[in-house]
Image 1 (cartoon, protein in one colour):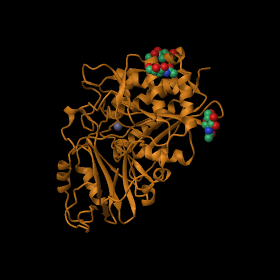
Image 2 (cartoon, protein in one colour):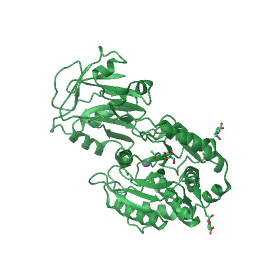
Image 3 (cartoon, helix red, strand yellow):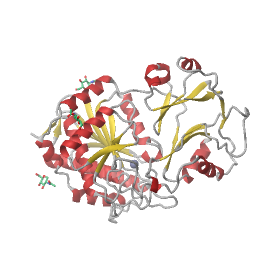
Length: 462
Ligand SMILES: *[C@@H]1O[C@H](CO)[C@@H](O)[C@H](O)[C@H]1NC(C)=O
Ligand SMILES: *[C@@H]1O[C@H](CO)[C@@H](O)[C@H](O)[C@H]1NC(C)=O
Ligand SMILES: *[C@@H]1O[C@H](CO)[C@@H](O)[C@H](O)[C@H]1NC(C)=O
Ligand SMILES: [Zn+2]
């Protein structure tokens, strides 16, 4: 839908559900993409572009203050009983109203009052759904807002310049289809993935959360000293398994991405990437952010895969990358930067699988594997689903909202077929020693990630 005409830039602000047909059929629209938020794609096309597929006559005018930035705020997809802080426009307005209105330079204006306001913040969103809102705010307000919004609300600053909406190229999808169509149970794969050690994961996670008292880590928040300890510790652990690793900074003040590679035994550019994120988020007002599930689970699962590669002498006929990102809790910043680097270097990515929160399910529920419903590359998701059925039949596979990795064949592994149910989500109580935290499910989801890597990267044991 057309939100309005941004008077200062003459661009239109347009929002569509993810992968709307207009996007693929209008190249000019695809060239004016500014990101996917929730399950909505946002664009700022020119008037002539919009006119080629829609009428602009009724579009309201939007005046943005020159310093304003567009900010997307949304509630994470939570089970009903968890929403202590349900998203509503009214509550968003209450948070906005608590901000001091000294630095007056805000925001967006609406057609009905064509004048620049000053004074308290304009709390009217440019666009909203029942769980999200798009606002125009001054950067100072955005910063303050990130400190006071509930931890279960996410906030994303939209880029000021558009980039291209990149569909996954057809040859890349064809390769994934090819892997899927030749997929058969392989007893070697079954033996390798069953070698993952649960006690080792328990030790690793207790180090990263600080539960064992050895690491001194209180938090792995992207700006914390604990995140730097974790990054260095992870680098050393991954290198012990034969990988070459680097700590790659991506933004000042943020802990680095940890990027580890196993070279291919054959000469090829193709690369299979599996990932998690090691940064964490705690409760408002507490320094403690153990991140045992989010995403200590995905991180230690990845490390367990690396340790098993070493233990069993697994090698690959493809390049393999194991990456743990930082900055994910600030709007997926680490993985976005890495995706851009891969784009700039024209990386030949066969597929990518991110594991984020794999340990929790509600007590009484079976072990599950949640795969993305709308976003992500369907072919990769199907491949993972079939591999899970073949190698780890005890996991109940189902669907879960969200995940996006622009232009590369990618999918996402999650702990539940449904919304987030972990009561310790973005909470200082996210330790591993608690009810509902299921190490066996964590291990089983790591097995699925590992088996997909083995099939996609053509392993060798000789
Ligand atoms: C993948 O699984 C689906 C449903 O379980 C099945 O219909 C399909 O044949 C499988 N595909 C392959 C290539 O094994
Ligand atoms: C993994 O394989 C190693 C080497 O064969 C073996 O010593 C170890 O017991 C296995 N561990 C598990 C958990 O299967
Ligand atoms: C990517 O790898 C595939 C599989 O090896 C190969 O066929 C293709 O030519 C490669 N593409 C590029 C751009 O290197
Ligand atoms: Zn996470």
